[in-house]
Image (tube, rainbow, N blue to C red; front, top):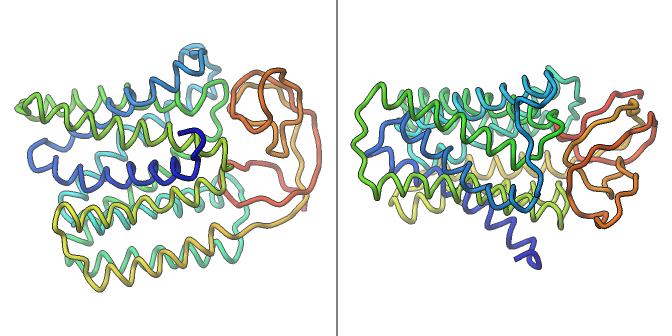
Length: 346
């Protein structure tokens, strides 16, 4: 599989997109909190192979205070609150519409970057934001009052994940796989315990296994494939491919759940595709300054920021080790994503 990074990126998107229709089916039997717990416990199981491959494990209580708080924020919003809001919304609307609403996570990430983390937002990004919000509004109205309720719940979930993305991007000293592991383990246990307090656990062994299976592959293995493909394709290309996940959700909902695709959904798909094109192919050039710092985080040596030597590791391979950044001001083109964080001097 490492020889086929493009296939891995699409498979990651397919697995993640499958989570919505699969969860819709599981919600017919499993209560919301119990399902959310099982899905994220499955995610924790799914990334264990990547953690083993890293051969280095970071305990959360050994992280510095800022990093620990960011991890706590990612677990609380991205692991506990977000999934529950999504599943409540999924109960009220079709899985096809919910799949398309999930594009709001990217918009929420961009907006939080602009409003909270002082990232610049170009005209193209604003057009993409307005377009995606218009498509989401159209979907909500087309499904009536329940659709509006569902749309609001999924939007809130996406805003939770938007903040989660920024918290995760700022975490140092722990890899993305380990962040996902702790998020899945802690959030999964919390939601499962809450679910058991609210309802008796009546799911069969096979149904429990099915929920864990979805978590392992749609949230765990999907991340593993995405990270591996990003090492070969680069973050921007892999993210562009991964953005197809909601559309896979729509296709799977129509194929396996026999959901009909409405005219409003078709229009929304077209608007979202155009919006994503505006967003993903926006690349700008400006001078910016990186302050001197020493830390450990997930990086590669051909990204324009990490030019230090690390024997035995190819420049295009993601890895984590402690290193120093010297204060530097330089100019290079980049895609406007929340992970490209710097102080502007332009």
